Image (cartoon, rainbow, N blue to C red):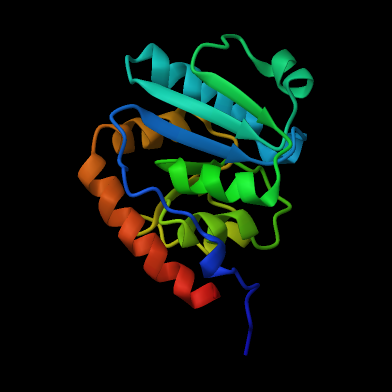
Length: 179
């Protein structure tokens, strides 16, 4: 029997004002290559270029680390390193958590934290994440490193707030499995 990592459901702070009119995307992680932040930034630029009103908040990386990766700062907010309390607040506010990791993730604790916050995820289809996300139920899984597929998944969810709400409910239910 495999016992997964646990998430503290009582720490979650879901914002019940979601979904927002402007798509609020959150990335939580360091600015290291395997976390896939450059892939997300390319997908986000294409999303905004397609006319989707969206904001991307980057938590866990500093402005100095993110700046060289940006072609356009418009719509990107770099929160830097955040406290646990701020991380939970950001997870609860976001419409989507995006986890574009390229590999090397054994589980993806931030995915379960997002689920606890009633926040669906768009993540890479990698081993550790496939064990957490039920694609098309509480999130979407896309090929690792594919900014085009990632951007299309974000656009599809941006244009369908009802689907995001269904996924948010399913995400919170899924979090129970990891409590």
